[in-house]
Amino acid sequence: MEKESIESLGEFGLIDRIKSTAVLYDSNNTKLGIGDDAAVIDNGKTYTLVSTDMLLEGVHFDLTYTPLKHLGYKAVAINVSDIAAMNGTPKQITVSIAISNRFDLAAVDEFYEGVNLACEAYHIDLVGGDTSSSRAGLVISVTAIGEVEKDKIVYRSGAGENDIVCVTGDLGAAYLGLQVLEREKQEFLGNPNMQPKIDDKTYVVGRQLKPEGRTDIIHDLNEIGVVPTSMIDISDGLASEILHLSKHSGVGFTVFFENFPIENITLETCTEFNLNPIASIISGGEDYELLMTFKQADFEKIKAIPEITPIGFVTKEKENWLVLNSGEKTKIVAQGWK
Ligand code: ADP
Ligand code: MG
Image (cartoon, rainbow, N blue to C red; front, side, top):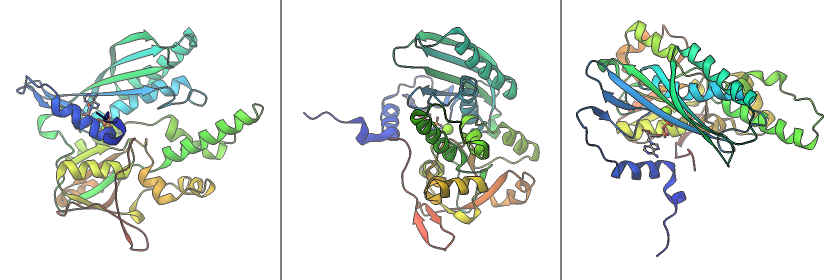
């Protein structure tokens, strides 16, 4: 019999398969298991949120251009981002590392300097982890634990017809930052004496190396008393996240490219690298901004948060469309990880 390949399933197919056989005994307390940005556990008074992400050297990061301090910060920030995506507040993290013998004590210290900086920035406690040796480069696994009031929780599944689709911050910069870093790496390998030419690219490079989880937006939303109807963080690219919200909510999304918040430097870098700006913005990952939907009735209120930009609306038809500046429509199709 021919072996089934993981590749044919893809990341999300594989997760669905694991989910279909997952054992759930405690359905009283396990409010939501696999399938959202974080698991949701009923602790009586509030919901506890749990999210895990793993980062592998050579897959998720390249130590030739990633300072370990930034890596430590980023490993925490991307988990904080998943807690924020449930409208929650991060409280604790555990950090596990597997290190190869290439690492010395100073390297480990530098990594934890970044972890601790992030803990300070997000007001969270480092409460545990695990340490191992590795024969295949550095492996990092972070678990974040958060909390949300029961009536404030936001899932991927709550988007409704006519809701307004919004994003926070700006899009695409982290992906372009990665292109800049990759180019510098290639040039450095060709000529180790060269000086890096990233002075005018500090914004996009910074977005790649030092992303932030948008707990500030969660705080602001709480202040104005608005709860999104659905939410997800943008880790794999806008297209992929739109498809997740669409699938989980059973609705469609129509978004307008002309409304997308994009920094000039991001577009300029697209031109410089001969990259299609539309493809780069919609598929480029790692911005760790939030994609969310709001009831029309809340539209006036969310104007008080300048970092939230409306980009489209939700339709009953389960099709997802990107409207280009020309007015032409293109269907949003699966991208994501392979
Ligand atoms: P995110 O991009 O928000 O980190 P993922 O796409 O990694 O989310 O995961 C989606 C969902 O699948 C989450 O609920 C996550 O906990 C779950 N998941 C991913 N991999 C596994 C696994 N190996 N076993 C169980 N659950 C998993
Ligand atoms: Mg997520």
